[in-house]
Each structure stands twice: as C-alpha cells, then as structure tokens.
Image 1 (cartoon, one colour):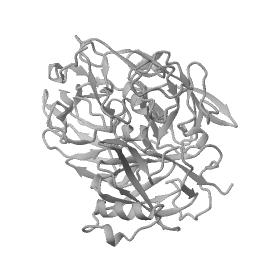
Image 2 (cartoon, rainbow, N blue to C red; image 1 turned 180 degrees about the vertical axis):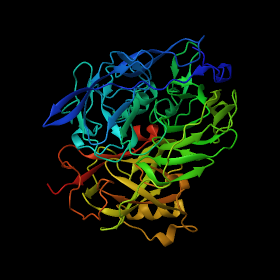
Image 3 (cartoon, rainbow, N blue to C red; image 1 turned 45 degrees about the vertical axis):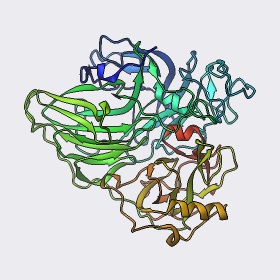
Image 4 (cartoon, rainbow, N blue to C red; image 1 turned 90 degrees about the vertical axis):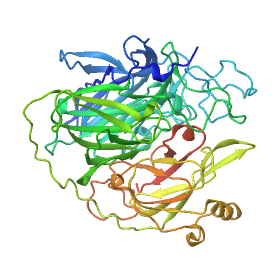
Length: 562
C-alpha cells in the first residue's frame, strides 16, 4: 500500500468539532455525591481525513455522552476519546474497560520491555511472525492527577480483553478525589514498550477539573484542542513507520514525526468562530513532535494557565512552545476581525506541510460579550526548600551505530528504584541531559516550578559520570558553560511536564504536597488525602513516547508517614 502524499490532502476542509463529553451517573456515598463512568477502549472506523477519503481504523474510547444538537444522551465512540468534565472536590470513579479485540496495528518490538501477555519465548529478531500482536493490553493514567498509586496506572498493572492481567494489576475501577486546583489534565494508555502505538492509535483524551470562580468564556466559546501528528496510507489507514531501521530493536525508532497535523481527530480542520473572545485549551498529544505555535497574523494570545492550572497573572504571548504532554490555557480575541477573515494557527518549527495546524474563520458578527477577567488569578504556595538537592542523569546508550535506548541514571525500568522521596519534601531537582536529543519528563504525583537551565560540556560531564558512577553529585563548575537562563515566559507557574534540552542542566523546585496547600510544608508530613506508599510505585518517564517505550522510565517511591 502506497503512502498518502500529504500535499494531496486539502487543508481546512474538515470541520473541527468540539470533542464529545462523557455523561456520568451519580450516586451518594457517605452523604457525598460521586460521579461514575463506564468507559470502553475499543476499535472502530472514524473520518479523520476530509470527505472523499476513506475512513480510518482507529482505537479510541466509547461511553455515554450528550448529543450537542438533540441534547439526548447516547453511546458515542471517538478517537481521541471524549472529555471528562468533573467538578473540583467531587469524587469520580471510572471503570476502564478493555474491549479491544483486534491486533495491534503496528509491529510489536519484542526486544523491548513489553507486557508479553502470552508469555512468548524470545524470538529470533528476524522472525516476523504475528506472535505478540494480540491481545492488546490496557492500563490508564490520568496525567497530572494526584491519586493513590493503585489508581495512577502503574505500567505493569495492564490487562487484556481476554482476562490476562499484569503483575501489579489489582483493579480497573479507578477512584479520583479531584481535590487539586482546576486544570486541564489528560488521560492515556501507558503499557510498557507499546505506549507509542496506543496513543498514536487514539487511546487518549482530556480530563478537566472545573472550578468556575472566574468570569471566562464558556460553552461554545470554550474550545479544547488535542494536537497530534499522523501519517496515512492511500486507503486511509494509519501509517507508523515501523520498518526495520535498528539492528538492536528492529521495530523501534527514537522518534516519530507524522506528515499531517490533526486537531481533535481531524486532519487540518477549520473552526468557524464569531467575533468574540474564546478560551482555547491546547495539549500536545503527539508522540515526539514539539510545536512552536503562533497565529498567522502575529496577533497576541493571552495565557491564563498551563499544566498545573491557572498562572498567577495573565500575560500576552506572540508564540509558545509545547513539547509532548505539555498544556496551555489561552484567551484568543477574534473581535477585531471582519466576516470571512481567516486566521491560521501555525507551527513555526516546521517548514513543510506541518507548518499549518488549523484555521479559524470568522463567520458571524455579533454584539461583543463582555467578561470581567482578573489580572491576577492565584497566589502560589511557598516553595521553601527543606531537604537536599537531587541530581538525575538522562543518558543514552549505543550498540554499534544504533541507539540502544534512553535511561534515567543509566538504569532500566526493571531495576530497583533509586528515586525515593518523602511526602512534604521540597527541594531543588536538577536533570542533566547527556542525550543527543530533547527529553520531555513527566513526574507523577507532584507539581513543580522551573527555576533555570544551564549549558554543560556534555563530553566532560559524561566522562566524570562514567568514571564515578553511581554519581550522586558533581562539581557543577567543572561542566557548566555560560550563565544559567530563566525559563521561557510561557513556562511559568506549576507544571508536571518538563522540557530538558540536550547538553543542558534543567533545574526545578518541586514540592511533594498539593498545590492548594498555601502554608509552608514539612518533610515527612503527608498533605495528600491518601497514603502515597500504599500500592505500586509512581514513575518518572519521558513523555516523548518512543523514548519512554525504550527504558526512559523509572519507578519513584514516595514514602508516606502513615
């Protein structure tokens, strides 16, 4: 089957639809309202390319949603999945059902640490048999959620539609208290060694914790956007370049860039808007691709939040950068435009077809809606350091000419944890990237603030590291080059996803306590509403999924006093 040439796909013909929203059932427990959802991971066909092209076989999620036109409740399947909208401090229970009965759409690399549900013996790497392609596994993680470890989606807690379960599986019925600040989180499948396929196939979606205390655009004027890149065959099926390219790991590659851009499951869509102020939440849900996003007429966008929720005060941006897993909360003002004006959302990192993301077309001129938007949103809690600095190394290995994988502290995921925290700990954590590539880390459970970045002499640092490992600290003066630089403007506030450039130290200050706790915290005191050490470990992982699938993931133990 021939690859579909992206230049043959008409841009901005697809109509962008808001993602469907799951509808919960309600019940009372201990005099408190609980939301309950039953959600199915499943396989189906969806129109991703414009009309006239074939539908695409995808994975996604199904469940009860409200039809925006009829207002009736019906079962809906969508890829990426429908959105959860939950109120802060309301308990939410989700039954994540694995109903994927087909095979993986792309070739499993059996040389990686993958679930191997059928306990297949190691094969000759030249063996292209279908062993391992079925049954697909599922374990769900809500990225950015403060949850007990049992509900965090431990990678080895996977399960199949046929009833096979991973070594740390205990339940597929996850409970979230939603006590943290209002924010846009996201959910996705993260079985080890195959998460790049799962998310690429469509097993992801948005999770909003809502706290409507600000006068902001809502309903039709609030548009969440999931940005992804994909490639297609001429018959409309998904293409992931899994041809053998690496002698060590035949069906793994260090990064994947698709040649088309999708928003909310549509290739290069257009959204018709009114001449009003819109709130636009954006997530980069691509496997590897970063985006430097700007509007085609160089208009300012107003940032009001990021990964961890609202920032302290709004700020104007001409552009911003999102690496995989990063989110931003924006206001875009379309009131200055005339009817039929078209504005394109651009990716300034791309020079090919992928420089265009989507378009907005002004189709209705109406009286402007006025909002009382505050200049200041939140006050940050104190981040007073109460324990020692930690240095963590991001490392890559090679065998011959090929990369063999990416590692945290040069350890595989399977080795015992060496990242051990205490609740209430607040400290400086520096990540020293000795890889040739960008790394984008997601730290489970805790939010952080970026302090600074500083260039290093990578070869000198690697030499010191390899002579002295295990290396707990280093003489920074020996390896640093130039002055430390502050984070980018759009990176301010609390985050859960961190861009670590190559040949660079990236420093953060992190606090193992909820961000709504405004008092100073003490190490060893548990400010979460659950025991953080009751269950499997949390993890730290690269959100660049090709890296994550080849060992850039490590367990972290968070010790509770309970």
